Image (cartoon, rainbow, N blue to C red; front, side, top):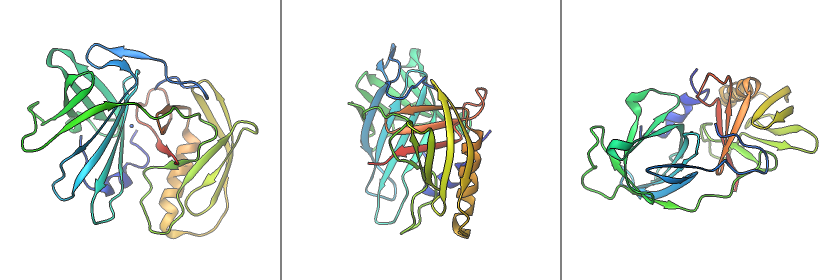
Length: 256
């Protein structure tokens, strides 16, 4: 099952090729990896860009081998951040980290050398260091873990439109209600959750006509309707369908 919003995600242009049991108010279960050390782990760095001033990378690795990668482009043009979710593994014999996006296949796997617990170095498709530039991510203190209820979760994959309202959802644990917006219409629903299980029902929106937001609105409603579980990783919320499907239906980022 492909990521519901994967078509929009590619509008950002470049791509380098986003479940922990999470309860509201609880952090991820800690873990460790022989190559990476304590988990979850967070890495940041600014890497060279062919047609911009640089790309800020922010990579979060969860103990259950889920990752979220955010790429922010420094450019005179309006370029959306790229948010990529997927699964990671360590090739111990080669001291390499593999990142494979959930909505693609192994052809889009990116490779990183684990230089130490605190440093990752980008590799090319053959596993060699990338020449002519600084391609290093350094381990940093991760963002504060977010509760499911409370934050305004903004949809990451909706196409940017200047002046448009963002598509978002917000969970209210005192009333078990969901409020939000599709970027055009107000959204309302009820939800039930137990540990990482999540079910939304009575999903409704107002009926304002917004032709340029219709695709996003329909896809957002379908993702919420199919949600069966969730995961939080740093500032991100991932919604999943069937347990057999590792690809998230939608990815949201907590508003700052």
